Length: 562
Image 1 (tube, rainbow, N blue to C red):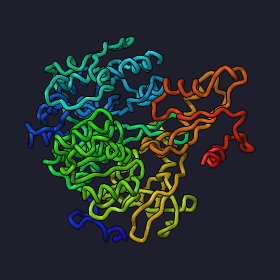
Image 2 (cartoon, rainbow, N blue to C red):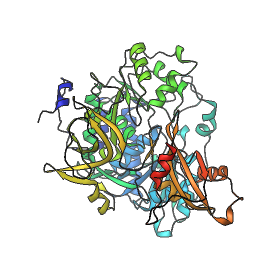
Image 3 (cartoon, rainbow, N blue to C red):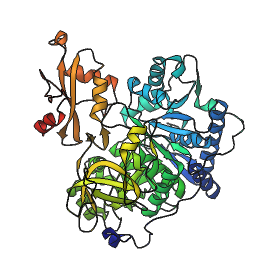
């Protein structure tokens, strides 16, 4: 059916595609056959050819199989961006298992959930994070613990003394160059990366296909612990292929990869899309504006997907004039709106139209994207390839006309199967609309007369801090473990750089009043939760507003803050 946005559809592309009926592993294997000596990854000057990436992934897959990993088993993967993350991701898939990607900012208290909920018996991580996983693991009951932990060091992937390694900020040096001792795993075994790969073990047969579970990324929500999103090979494959087509990708492309690969956008729109295409990924372990400027200039980067705050930061560098951005042909991203003035500067100074998109963990990243040839600023874009998206009244589920605010719902091959071990949450997340199963995004938006979608508000309670989603219920649950906290309500506060930041309104126990400061609470949060979740602002109050039924009225606090 022709819809208004189809007038702006790229003429070179169909409205929907037929994704390959193969596993995600096959994309790496095929690119390695086609381009064995071509650079798949670049990391601090070291080039990883496709054939080498495949070989290392197969050796790690054989090791995982020897550790007892079988079809459908979940393997936890906890790393910052580095070549080992990509190799381990594909090794898990080659072992017929399921990747459980974990945010490396998570602390032991949070990590326990990512071991227990997916029943993970094997985890793969970097030396700087291994002790935190070991700490979480030691606090679990014997039957819940990991059996194996594979640990790599960043210097397994690059030579810090190489002449073409490029700049390394002083603040990175201890973190990247330190080789950490392997931790003890009670009742289990810890294996160094080099030892894990040094084998001639037999590879298991490749048993997985489009319908088998591939990835179990976790997303938080309005209640308690994060929920695993069940994505088969099919859903990620669709968006990897569609993303490659949408962005005019070719095997000669060079992509700057700084968006984290544990996140659905970095995983699908960057890692999987580029491996499918056979192009080159220039990796950054974390954000630094001058490292990014140097890499774009030195490696002639052609595509850069990012969070808008990264672009703002790079443009503000005192060294910006020395960087050459002329190789860039595509720049875009999501997670937060790109300020119009910055988008205009990119257009006027570099002839680059910033392409914004929108998606959720449940939709394998993009469900919407602006057409590269006809983007609108501060806009989610139009429904992505093969995606049917509507705006409906959240109560009556009636479709709304352009300009009216309602809930965004989506149907398509990129939508996940449901929540791991949460049948009730799965049922609540879907509706039947026009005879099809649509996912309820929980986001409020509207369309314009051209069929472009705009985000207006949220049905779900969520804070967007520089593109990271923070769910207040999860932060509150962690804060209640502090012995001084009687009650806590987490809301958003405006932030000139992050867009939104996290604020906690706290009622202290009478026994702790005068003994604990707001800064003490903030410091404890920094120690016990991922830094992007921790409240930057803590406010003590005598009581929280409550409804007649005793529920905390968070909206009252949020409106007062606004």
